[in-house]
Figure 1 (cartoon, rainbow, N blue to C red):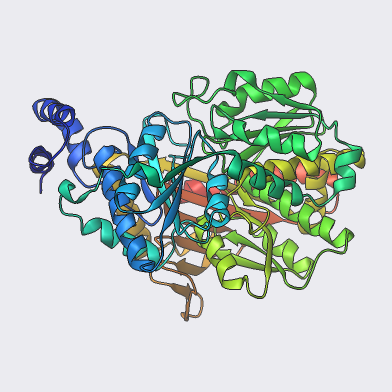
Figure 2 (figure 1 turned 180 degrees about the vertical axis):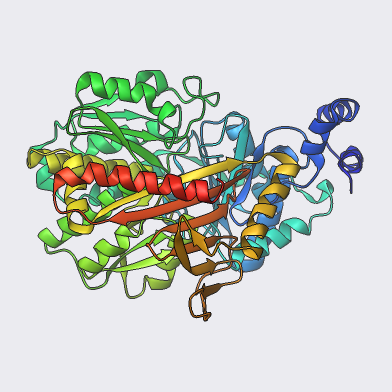
Length: 572
């Protein structure tokens, strides 16, 4: 079906008159806009929906959200036929997030499913917590995470508080695909089956965050450690300051210009704590206060970016690999010191996250699981291991981290609490966080990781990304920057190929469109199209040993140059 034919088919559906008028305007207007709005259906992928808001089959709107919810409702009722099913729904600060949350609630209600709807915006990790706390069978959070303001999204969760994983993801996708017309979407709510909530979950969630602290003595002794926090106009403002206060931190400074939730994100180009521009105001405040730590959370409060003082007193942004490595090391060291590190404990990370974490875990005798990218896969490991083992921490390179298995998704609230504790721990030692990073590098070598993202928008962009991956598979490099490629991991086929001896091995992972190249000089390059944005991402990892602190910075520069050479060799 062409975009024009698809648009015309919408006009024949039972949709609001305002939608019909906007579609007619698109048909009579710019062909490219019509194509982008109607060239495909906004896919209910393995995590839900994400797209630009507006009229069209490839847009976030009442009908695409309604169709996703109807499919999810159908599947919930099939899986739990003997239960009065319950779902929890939350939303972030984005434009229309509250509207889409109400639409989602109405469809569930019309299908006879009881709804717990957060009265106001709340962080994604609190939604994950609420599902288990309220004994729900599913949950939804309306968010597009760190995407630009034009976007919104819809993330679906299962009864364990994790985003839907196999086989539920594929089954829900099929249920959504089975809906052939909008007349099959039940929009008429049954209002008596809804409970609007806030403190009912807020208090137990914050109590849980408080209980996760490891070194209470350090917090008490250095409660006045200087912390700067910005929610970047998002949901973090509702929980992070409360969590820090509950733990006893008394010197917390909020970036007021970014404290008010606002879906237009007026002070930043992108509300993404991975981007240094989004932390400009926070960095200025932290530098002016001579603070110990800057923390910034994304709009839905599941990821946190940080900056710490270097040895010259200037604030330095740490990447997600450095932050995850610091937190994992702190957990391991603190638990060992307090005799609370048990043989049943384990950590988890994704395949594109620093192998420094694997190295540290091995040194402490702690098992480290590797998963595909996405916290739902870490949550899957937790579900598989919870009968015999206990998860104590883990993360991914894009600033996501979990400190326990109570929440089954990235949790910036608990992570901010742990980061503040780490800062207090270092202050008690009369050191900064950068000194702990130096300690790690001296012990395990300097690790340098970075990521290059290439954006390819629209229909042609998706085709270009597919061609890039196809070319890497059909014509894989035999050397990269002069170093022989010794292994290739193709997670779409589940096969690891040993390029030296020609053997193949099975990769014990779910299938995913990811390629990894491992070279003789221990460079690792991963290629992965994003599942939520029109991008292809390339991840690079290199390392080298050092014997003194003075070697760390020169070695880091050499490794950065090596990665630049790798990028140039691959024409990236």
